[in-house]
Length: 244
Image (cartoon, rainbow, N blue to C red; front, side):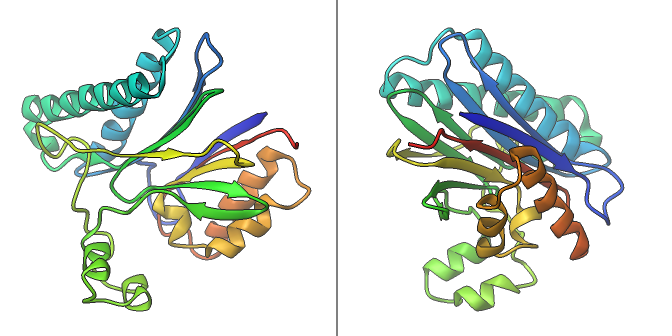
């Protein structure tokens, strides 16, 4: 098993509001997480950093997440803690009002694989060189697609496609979607929308199935986004399981 992560400010933004990590605890369980921050002067980078740092610390401090039910409860608990920290920060620092962050995470143990998300950062599994999206975007446009008011094509270029319906730090409480996924996958791939807004799924697949080493694959994905304009920060986290 090998894994790596990378973040880049892109070509347009003057600072990076994304944060990303992959951590392993004493039991060999692995947590991957990507957060895409937003709001105010430096508010976004503070929000994503607080979320990723504290979630990572809490995971590392736990010797094991336990069984699947325990793990789901643990994920909800540490995400809720991060949400309260962000909400308190905006209360104590009024200039950061509107600060928040998306969050997508994956938790892999020898017995199960869980995904969780808030907002529009994406979580995928890799099976036989194909990417399958697990998470659902919490956006206004996605809501309109589900209700039949917009087509997928209309949604792709909609002027309000980045309007979030859910974000970490926006309210005192937050609801995270949890997905229980079969463990017979070849890999796990998380990213901020800075990647998916620039590259089609097929383009990402092509890079992941190439003969490059894992770090070079992530570098190439970011390079491709920047060649296309790099209009947003770009973050990726990739775990590749050993070949069977």
